Amino acid sequence: MRSLELFNCLPLTLPNEEARAMATKSNQNQVDLFFHYQSLLHKATVSQGLEALSPDHLALLVLIGHHWHDGEAMSVRQLMQMRDVASPATIHKRLHQLKDADLVSFEESATDTRKRMIAPTKRALAYFSAASKAMMQAVKAV
Image 1 (tube, helix red, strand yellow):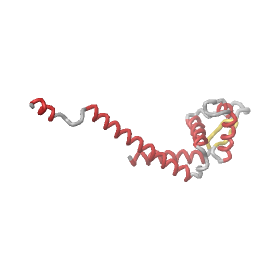
Image 2: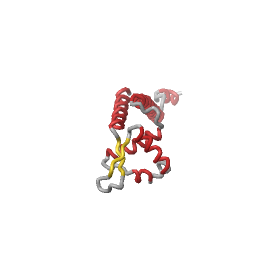
Image 3: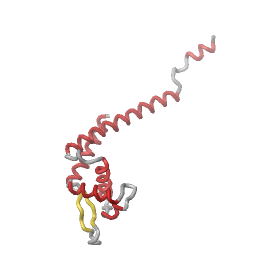
């Protein structure tokens, strides 16, 4: 009987189980944060009038914006050579759709007038700002 009494004083959950439960709760919080952010990002996309753009268009816009923000604006040719993004024809089509939506502009390179550099427009920067605000709002909510 004494050995049974000894086991009665042990915690009901072992440390590994506690850690697993904490990790699961942490993961759930991260999942909740992700979907809350996605919801807010969708609202920001709609508020900017960009709901007609596909996720592929938005990903391309973010790629262009990221390079531009880092001071490494991409040329049309550089972008079209990124085969892991899409085929050159698809990139060309999406790029012109982004231009038609007033999200990117083409500028001559300062060093080579044959090169057309891609830059985000004020409208694209407004979208990036709205997306950033959505991110901040999601983080504050959790």
